[in-house]
Length: 67
Image (cartoon, rainbow, N blue to C red; front, side, top):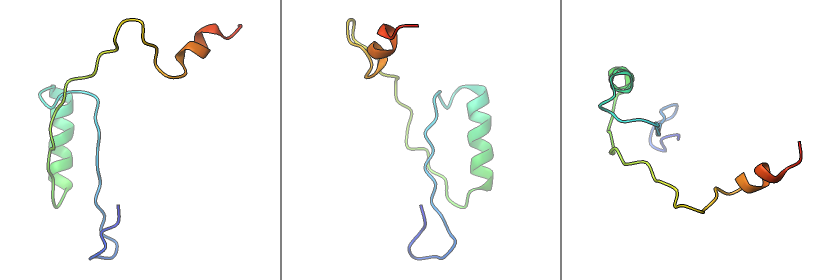
């Protein structure tokens, strides 16, 4: 997102699938931190689990579509 106070300066948000303790993701986050003027890790959150019997939107249509 462009920063309103500074032309050609941007703010980036990243969403990753993984945990910061994972060696590969940890290395990637350290590299981002090395290049960024400002870096803040907002947190790591557990992945949501689907309840039994609930389908993800659109998945039922794919399962029932004729081949």
